[in-house]
Length: 197
Image 1: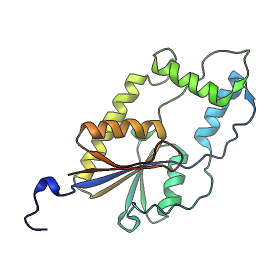
Image 2: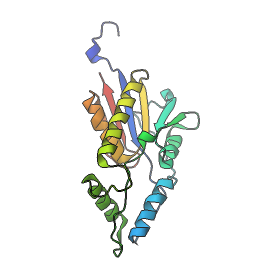
Image 3: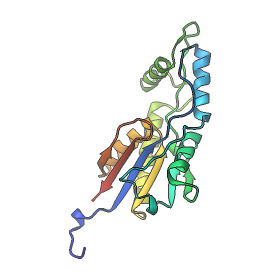
Image 4: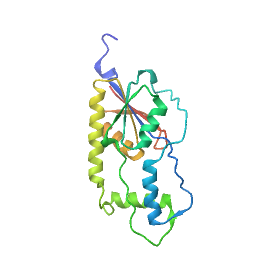
């Protein structure tokens, strides 16, 4: 509206969506080797079928969607937005890497393996051969800056990616002046929407 102060006008919206549930079993107890195989299987898995009709997403306006190089991100984007939308796949939108630590004689639930591996990684004790936590945070910061730049030219920017990465991107977008309007957590298909005035 003419005469509306710049401070009251929405300059853009960024949607961060987590992928759907991958089709990989978590049941039972896992050896170290089986836990490592689980991560590989998870990264290669297809996702469950779903119908998503989120009232905040302007589906008709979305012409392109950013995704990670991991298949679960791309398959989820296709199910949400259909075949006509252009998927833009970029490496910086990959989930933070995980590495199973060496406890060869134990069999544990996969969740315990994954949480322990993530905590040790964040402490700098479990990053041999993979991206460090510091490097991952820098990648998320750069990803947030990239999305913010895209929003300068596109009123609706959509990323379908991963739980932990999306959280860090949200934090860095907030540092850039973006305000969360919708925050649904980190569950499968959760939606975060940020706006900038």
